[in-house]
Image 1 (cartoon, one colour):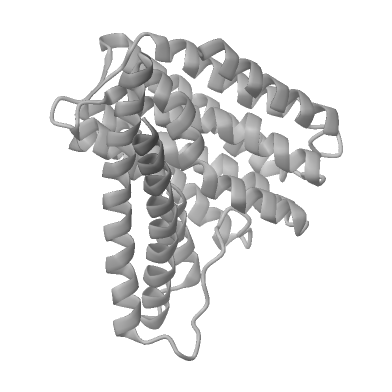
Image 2: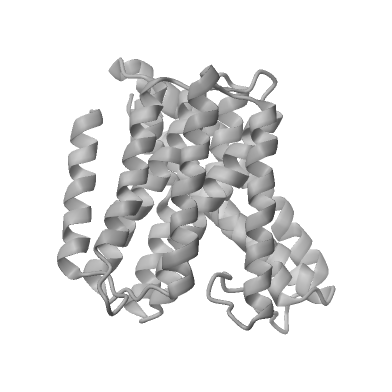
Length: 313
């Protein structure tokens, strides 16, 4: 048991560090090729924040632990809103941009409903369902591109800048090492999580919703809390809402496309999905007329997440 816990931690470290190294190397190579920062931010950097969830969900779908694949995504989305925005909201004043509140946040609710409908109707997220999710994803990318064309880059992640000692061979080596770390980290994480679930006699769904989802959400937690401390509150919120969208559309969409038989959708995920929708609605409810997340609202969100963990455990 102790060995599996250690392996789980090692897997998380490899996932997070590997994604970070991959994003930095890829972004700088793209910059050397004179690709616009907007394009880099919309693709490489944005995908990188969802790399841990993507790697774990794709690996688990291949290994037959579909509970981890879907549980990781739904659990991460719940943790992102209730836990991460709750913590960030307690630290600083989180200001929500109007387009985030009126367009992007409701969009999270819509695509979560779509996911629940697709999964619950035939108890499986099939390849066709993956195509549907990817269509929504492409529409979202087009929306982000339109935002940047109008001068609003708040939804775009920060792009690493080139340094004097950056050489193409170093950057390519970083990309390769990053990919290796993510692949190995995902395999180690899924294997260790499955062993822990078996040892405790709980389902893959529970492990995916708790340990794995929190672990793969660590990049979002670090980014949002850091942004909150620095007063960059639009990044703190945009990072979370954007991550939730990427998790459902890009991560689950891709995982279902590559899984030979699709991804099994346990009936319990319906309740978890409804809770994920409720978490987003709770967040919107606690936004005041000044477009700030109320402090007491952030506290209630944190308490709600603790209650959710107690409920599923």
